[in-house]
Length: 418
Ligand code: ADP
Image (cartoon, rainbow, N blue to C red; front, side):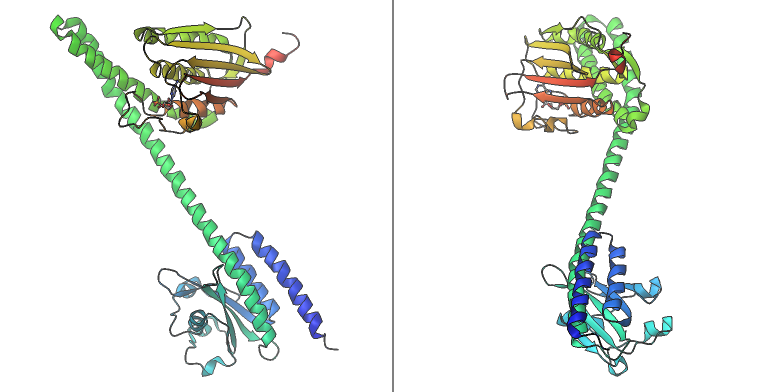
């Protein structure tokens, strides 16, 4: 007994809904195309199906998928819009049924001959994007029983519409992934450049520093000012190169960390002490408020020293002559918090996060009066995050700033026999 027409329709509709769900969840283009041709052949009960997509630049069609195994070289050959059946479907932007291709002058036998297949009839429908513009053609080839009917046209058109949108989405995702890959490559190139440049600059700089120190001792007193300027510039250069060199920690990631347990309070004390001369040169006062308690952390001491030095250096740099810098450390639950505060120029509230991006500086680099490359805070944050810690800034915009470092305390502090 024949299946009633309504039952056939209901079954096709249910299948189309299911296909729509599958197409929506597939973002890989070639996987998507394989699903579409498989479903096109099954839904229209035909021998084979193919997809040709339009190259937006050359405006030529190319076979992108076929249930017949078309060799990649053949599939890649362009199908001209003006002298092919697929081209006619695309240009008319509506379905085309050719019941007997041998009578159609636009039919080319090349592919049939190459793969040993015989195409008799073609039902071609355009695949359209969300704007209803044709982006390709879906072809059903050789109906298995009889010839293609109106219902096949409707089913294939619906499938092609679903497919057109899904293909466009997949292409956009692929383009985004490609752009992302390129960005990552650029980022790596930039980091590599920084690593090589800083390494190469280090040797000539140490020669300059060595000779200037020697000349300061030997040169006549009237050259003292000039030599001081050279020394000052060379020391400045050394700080810049040191920032660039610190990138090696960030790039190498956790693998390079030399983790040991040490007292964080002691480290902060050491860093504050080390910066006192620089602060004194600007007539600034550094006050340090530390707990009596030992606050052990499991971290790379040298790396955390870089983090704290960057923060204290900035406090000195962005605070005018005679300013005040306050450093304190305390235990907060299972963490140690260090805070470096100053009464300097402050940071606009909308930039409190952006200052942690590489090379970002609040003032324009060309007109600013402060030295630096905008790397210190990015390095501080990335290095602290390698230790599962956090760094952030607080400021109301113009009354100084506070920078916080939070690090997990070493678990030994919680052990019962301590
Ligand atoms: P650099 O100091 O080399 O410019 P950083 O990454 O250390 O780079 O800092 C980024 C920017 O954040 C600085 O250029 C400055 O605009 C702002 N900044 C950092 N620390 C302070 C601070 N203590 N007070 C005011 N602004 C600061």
